[in-house]
Length: 286
Image 1 (cartoon, rainbow, N blue to C red):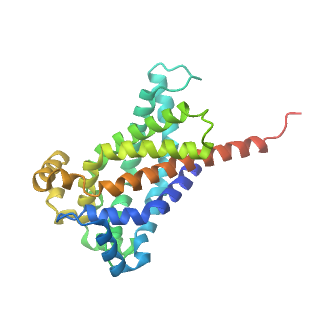
Image 2 (image 1 turned 90 degrees about the vertical axis):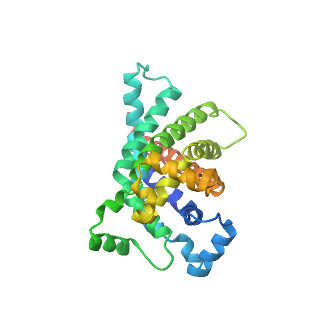
Image 3 (image 1 turned 45 degrees about the vertical axis):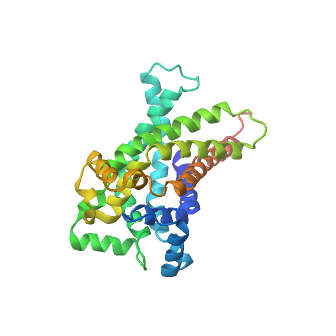
């Protein structure tokens, strides 16, 4: 059940944010002066047209659907395991700390599996002109540079844990606190809780996201790829300052919380639907 709901939520979240994602990445990987988003949009439309805004959608779906399915499958198991180890009484609501560490473990584990797919979708999304998964894959095969699939892996792992910890911790806790709210529908309440969780989580780890996106998109062409995470962050700070570390953040504060909200809300709604469907399909004992 969690695998199905996770896959559906991953697909929906990907489609909802892909055009914004592409503009953000194009701006984020640029090491020059910060360009206004309207200029990035104008250049993108001029080079690739409207359909170009969705470039990388196939690769994103290939990565996000299994990633989301893994996340929502692993999380309940991690929450249960950590709860048992911490002496949590079964039947009671998990504490924020349990949800925090379950989210940390979940995102860490899922990222180990799906990072190469993430690298491919970043490269496709920031490339002007027609290019797809097969072209990127053929280039990697011809060059034999399999290491390129794991550019940005260190920053991804360091960022994935906190993102999952804060995201799941805040979402599940807010959902419990607002469960009896009467001014919002259940779906709207889940969406709002997810948006808040995504907003806080993404802002907290954004400098790491900047480092990994440049490493993934530019590979050995950037000095950042030849440094460990701490050295890369230091180099970025020295060369571009605070603005460089948070380049693209303004759009990110809309795009990523939107994706997180869609993902959390649809996962919960699909899971609730499947649970109700299975309950109705069970034969009556009478």
